[in-house]
Image 1 (cartoon, one colour):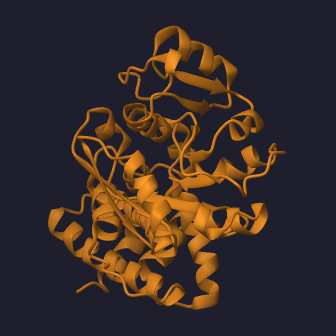
Image 2 (tube, helix red, strand yellow):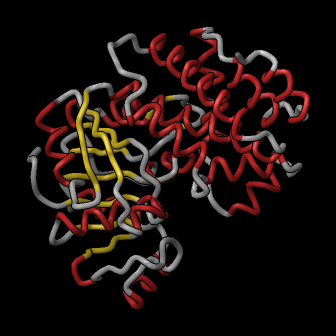
Length: 331
């Protein structure tokens, strides 16, 4: 595997489009995989993604589009995955080309459902990709603000420092600041949990809880996150860092946060199914809630916030008494 060559973007959604915008500023030419041929054709005709972040303009002549996952993998050296976690297996099931010699960058802030595995672990176990060839991209960075070129920060996690820095350099622009670390597991779990807690934040918002309560909720959330991550992956880490606390804060507070939007709808009385249909976007925290709940059956970490949102989303408990009961435990 070479730390150079062609970059391939995997996914056609808003986050993939935001990452492609960044890559277009650091790589003269790159590959881009989208599942739907008609999306690719419209992109070529109009010079932007027809479905997401339509205000971001590209030069289609600098992009080689693929609707076949095998072709993009074959012709790329570094693959940046931005496919929503619930659909990752579906895409990879079509793969006949090996991944183990590629550099993989997971920008997926979720867990593989059914398997209850982190993305890095899934690639390692089922596709034999060495840990040193897997990097994780995380941090407080909404696609919509990337589109507007607002100053944002990303952290690249990889067990191999050289590969981490190589990846970080790919994403460094005048409005994207990057750093590196080796806490791959901690970063991935934080990326999942912050979506879970953002749903609860949204539920509380929908129930008319105010900013004072939200501040207490966030302090309890980061404590619960720290307790879980330090149990499943004991490692010296600064949980107040941007890739942990920073990402949690922006996901729980931002108007761009789909998980917060989803939670707000639940708090206002929408059913889970109705909220999912009306959003027309994936709230990965919904799937992450169930995965973390099942994973925690083994570790038995005290996670009252997780248990509360699970009871609302999966056991159809009323949000009003569930949140009140949770609030009574906060200090």
